[in-house]
Length: 343
Image 1 (tube, rainbow, N blue to C red):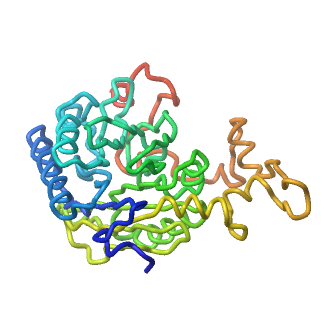
Image 2: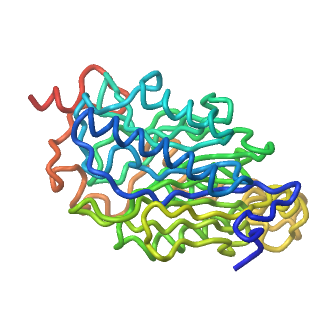
Image 3: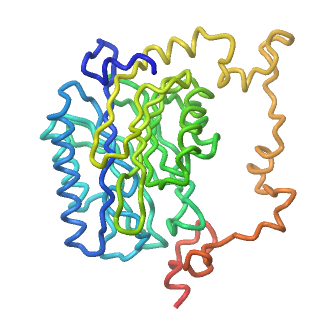
């Protein structure tokens, strides 16, 4: 395990201390449940601050507010100007800390969005992201449509957020890094069958991009599902700095990370500076390297012609296996929701 400042207890002048909350998986069915879970998260923000005075950013998992029910009931969906987000803002102000939060966001034109927010210590929403890759066929959420924002986070570190299944696509972490992210957060609700995939993709996302990643799942059981916790802070060389392996609910996994060393590696590394070398192939042989795009899948995706050689044989192409109706809207059509169309 690499240097982590004893979990952030010893903070260097350039360090950013991150806390990952392995939050107990809740059951949320009613507005009253939602209100109670909001209060729980607010208490956990205070716990994070009381736990570690040096902490700069506390990160809550995907589904921290709603649990894993996949319920799209409008009565328990959130808005950016709603009471839940207001409570998160107030908690960040009161505890002088940045926070990363998860909401299922009401979408009048379609299915709800699975959204993530980063709020600064003055209560301002600094990053707003909608999950680009819902975990199909299990999740009913509308695919995100606002790209991947990168912001100036604590201590000026460049910060990005992706959500759960997003991290299984190497292109997502690469996009974060390409836009300048030095630290990428990955929040999730994953359960135990994904444990090994979670571990090696977190490390690969870091190493491929010379980027710190901070990753955390929900934890514990709601009586049906068992989330795994698995808070992981991974250094830019793929070394695990901190890892919550006990599965203990409400534990906060902490480490200090060094964005200044990320910047140094990206500038000075020759061997394995892969994010640079992707666009400068073979620069030893040809001046500046080859800057073409030899990847057929990239060209086809841009052209709208992405098609796998085995595309016609793929069996699961909608959510019916998980109880969802066949969608009738095309992407970008907000004239009616899938639920309305099914009636």
